[in-house]
Length: 99
Image 1 (cartoon, rainbow, N blue to C red):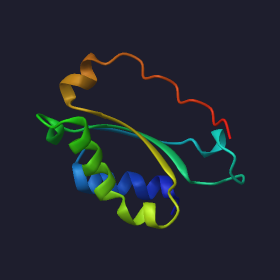
Image 2 (cartoon, one colour):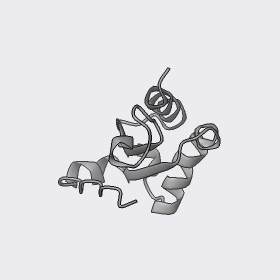
Image 3 (cartoon, rainbow, N blue to C red):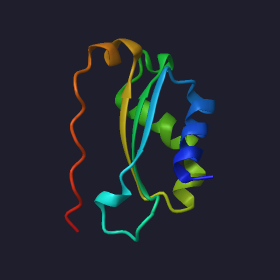
Image 4 (tube, rainbow, N blue to C red):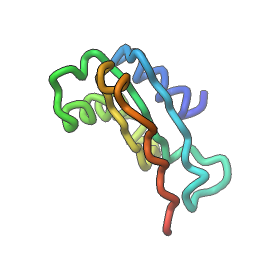
């Protein structure tokens, strides 16, 4: 199973998101071809209501502890409540790696 699939399954099980996108951005970085080390997650959860950004990010990080221990290097997180997601415009593009 790919890291992308594992991230999707773990976040779905832990947070029951109403919207989830897991995007492998490893190709934007100086890593070997077919790497799965850099991801962007866009996640919308009712459980994020009333929680600050730090608490939302902690919830995502806690669900992926094993993946970080096993080589997941970077995770860009965009965490929303359903209301925020409905109001959100386009997300900014991820920057290209400079290294």
